[in-house]
Length: 403
Image 1 (cartoon, rainbow, N blue to C red):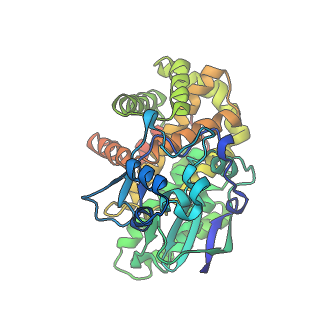
Image 2: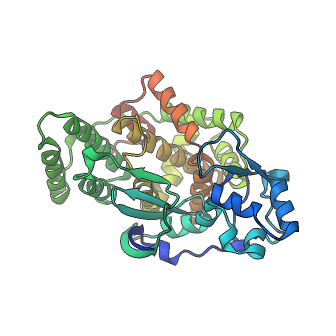
Image 3: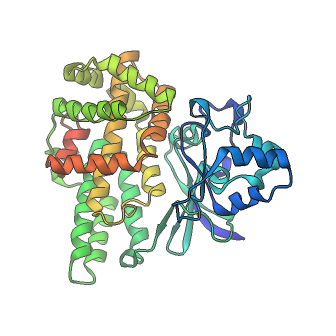
């Protein structure tokens, strides 16, 4: 059935590049098979295909979720056993798209539901989605389409929080306008976002019913008049602490995790070669190589942030957590990505959009599909009492900036 869907503007232009893709979505991940598709496989009349599917798909006997009813057992090297020599899906080629699991049929498209409205975007772990979303100098925008939505669709995220039903659109509008405010440096935009989230939490806890609406009107006026908080110019910087903390987090993750993305591992090796474990080399690379790149191509990181806000339903995507905790995770993702770019720029003696795109796509594939990583790192920040707005400034600022 066709429904009204709010979607990222690039989505209608997306076409899977198939065997020409620089990466593959059929490698290194656990791929679930929903119950409807699993039963369809069991009823296949083609005996050879039925045996092949049975051999490579394992029933999740202790899983109660309809969408994770079974799992594809990855083959040698972590590749999907249904991938042919041309890196194309043999299920799709031989049986048709109706025999793909919900996961395989939808990726890299994402489908959320915000109250009564469907929203669609793409996963930046897909190279083509990343290219379309991040390389637009005009910035990310959104449009309303009529799209075919199946009955009981597989949703990536669902927002039903009644307390924000009437204000969600205004909240998101303020956030995206702030992130796309190019009269401010990116770090100033993110710190202003922290002030907005702080005010949002306080207003949401207020006894007065109209406190939240009044707070939003105040920020809307500030955005319209470009009146920025004086605090933006006084947040602390500490590049050495930034490098030590972020590089330590990444080094521990790489040591503890079986990372399947060769693209990311090459980027990480470039980062290490560029910095040589030295905070001084890191800061020098920021000044010499990253600042010129950011001056011309800051839109790539801006697009990443805006895309994250839309696709992740920020700041309402972490049940049981505070709004400010979601802000901490957003800053952490941005800071880790930016740190990689600075080190890589040192290794390559410069940064280009193509090189940045490789990092941003492979980083998304490696870190953003690992929910446990951010939960664990959030605990690390809290345990170290490094979870304030001033501490977030340390993670994303390398020089004093006038707001």
